Length: 280
Image (cartoon, rainbow, N blue to C red; front, side, top):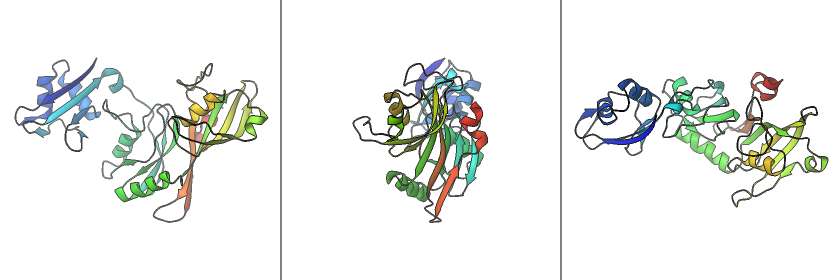
């Protein structure tokens, strides 16, 4: 079942009681589950997820429920904490996990998982995203000043992000030699730099290390599809590039000057979590 409903409290009432009255298609248990998984929004300023079923609403307050059986039943592998630096933390986001939730819920998102890991005792700010199908390192800030400082670094291209991808085909020398793609996307200039990491001649596939200089939507995936060497397992871009283990794109390292400590730091994905190790 899938439904979207906006309900208005006629008078002082508990949130769950209002939903039971106004959304008779769903049982009380399903409604509570939807609330716990972030699919019920309180139309306040700012809008927020309402998880506590017994929250008392005042007359005129509005709730929105976005209910989808398929989404609410989804699950995924838990993320892995790579480093906790108090003001920020570095996480491994597995494939199949959203970076953050949407109106349909947030229970399979990295941001919600991090919030639960710290028992909601720290604020969580997502600094950059990875596609749901991708895996790898993600930075989370734990204070507004820290989030602002990292956002400035990102805007100034001062956070180095390296990816490991597997693409269809064996790249020719005249493609590897410049090692860059400068194809504009969405009317904006962007640059992807890469180098050869390993070749599987039998499968006619290549592993590449990629440095993302700019950050357009699906930049790596779109650039390599345009080059004629789509990322293996990409569900949107390329042809004849299916992959039994999913999208072969992983963020494997992050480097930057820590805004607080003022010295260079680097985080690398452990070998046991790398796609290349998993594939082998």
